Length: 308
Image (cartoon, rainbow, N blue to C red; front, side, top):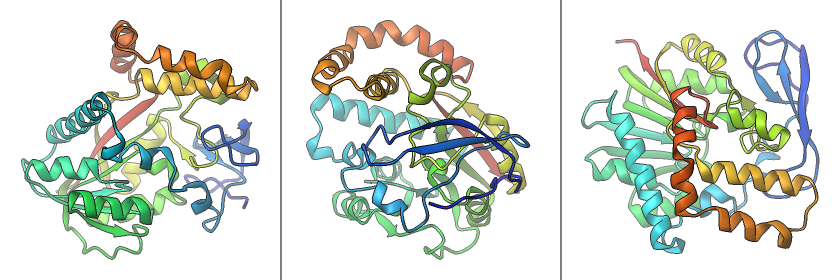
């Protein structure tokens, strides 16, 4: 672990926001998130070092596993395909009909495969060797295994760059966004989907909210802080949307809440599974749509454009 200053403003003037264990993978330790008093960036401090980070992203890490198409039920495949098509639809509102897309943190490649199906040249970057290899073999994608910095892409070579649930994981978001701006063509589109700490559920679930995901989420951004980062990188925010993060995310936060209270899994697991059903999903839609209209869902997606 290492102590760091605020990545946004450089100051060391933060207050403790919450502290707790790894509720997703149950790795040992307690981890702290702090809020900068100067600029409101939320960040882990002390945080995992670059050498420690891979230990918290095993092959069993849930975002990798949920992309293994052969392990999904029919309904899970439909949900996953619908989610990828929804992402494509929203990207298409602000992007050309075809071009070259780079997905940073592409995991097992399902979004890139969807873009390729719609005629895009699709390239990915993925830190996990397991996930990168799966994306190549299953979807015949071009994926660089490693960091964005090690990929050595040519400047101004992409029409669209996306990060789905990734920016909150990076060591230096300021540097990451500077590289993204350099790699985008003039007028190119950047899309970032990430946890929204101003979400209603962040207040409802407190330190058990899924969006904190200690210790993997190194930085969390309010919409205002994210806009500040983007503008400094030469990327103009053009839209903020909330179209994902519905019942499944709520139930995961609920799972974390009961787990944090020490309840045995046999006591709560059947009820969580029972709650994820179509009638409840339909009944909950009005509430989620209202939260989405207010941009207060657990996940927000920011669209930004590089100057022509």
